[in-house]
Image (cartoon, rainbow, N blue to C red; front, side, top):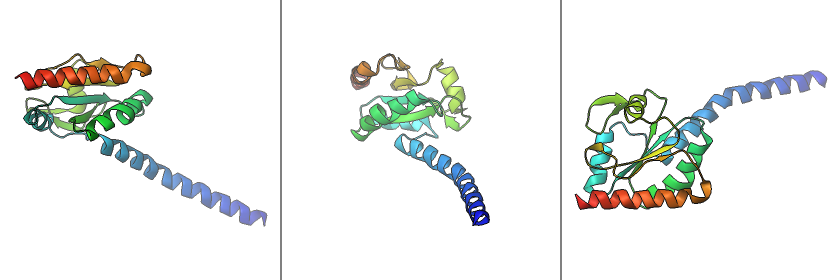
Length: 162
């Protein structure tokens, strides 16, 4: 009986070790599905501007709990309401066309935009210029939703005026 338990325990450990990478990949895929990681920020921006809206860009870092909070609790619902929202990875070399259509990567774009903190939320308008002040970090979860909505509204007004 002891041998049987040992074999079953070993089999369970092997199964868990085999499934762990799959679970991590699935979690990463779910995060990407919540907010798209664009291959072309230029195309996303053109689509947003064509609808008379600013493009909201979350600059995120894998494993960042504050990024998860902002993505899930604030930006995913905003996207579901029709606001164009995408995600750029602060430390990933995923290929990307920048707002002007030039080849870049997520990481290079974040660096070029001067992003140093995750999460950072940008509000892009014509030419890829910031249409409202960015939100760096999560200073106060109590007021974050209000700060975010204030900036989204300001960015959308700025885009609509052009």
